[in-house]
Length: 427
Image (cartoon, rainbow, N blue to C red):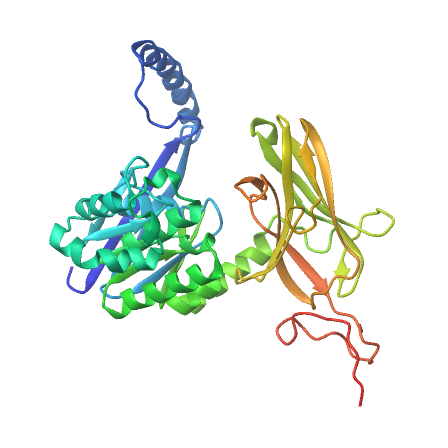
């Protein structure tokens, strides 16, 4: 392979819709699965008579091909469900491809989900040595890196505590520290910047830069396009499991931003920013609609800087939750977080969820953002904990310009001034 660290050729991964996660079955369950399989095979043969592909099959990846050179930092971008995480799982040998092949030169380290490969009953110290052994490291090598890993993760006081007692932040810091410091020749990182505080995210970026400067190969999956631009030189954009673009990072990001704008679930200037198209009744919680209303509660077809606007979140719940929170967030097209409003703890509004349809409003008496396009998302969560549900994809919010300061000039575009804040000058 020469200068090539990773070669992916015609890679494909197919899943059967509705198949449960692999587990150990009882004899009765195995027999039941075999009987159901007979009926499924008969039904699939009928489906295949039409277009050659079973109806209950879906391709998460199809005909994916690209190369990564030694020492190259490649971004993997695309919308949710594009196949990014599936690709990294195949490269990490967690799952086998249905077709195609992958060649990798060098030892692979991966951080795909928080604490993948960690054992909750073992202490932080024991998990560091366990993960090092899995990566093929000798004990002497791990000994040399141990203090550096612990310092980066900031868990000195808890290093001999079972990690099942760690907070999610501690868990994440330790997982990233182990993956980045044990010196794999190829590092695979999936959305590590989506969790953790700003300080930790900055350290993660800095460490990945150091890894790249040392000549190691990095594959970085993230929705944070600014981080992808900063860290990567090349990128692959995936859409519906296929490669839509492979090349310079700026061109790949431009393709992705164009897809966000033209293919978003948002509907441009209409008042409905998002509406569920699938069958949400089969999920425990779902955001079904996000719309804009005016002061009279009527549909608001567009929003301009300093407008009154009410964002109404419609949701559906299968069961009740005694205490929950609602959240509305805004980001740039590059994925940089600009605003996050929550009923808890921001406004101390108590909220419970009852089975069925519910509504929660987030009101802005004066919308402060300048003209431009933004990504808007809504969510339900347990207070200070995990999300119950979010939009499947952020919606596009387009803000119009206006003469907010009565100066005879329209408010500048967001590229020049992001916010319009009431103020006065005195000379």
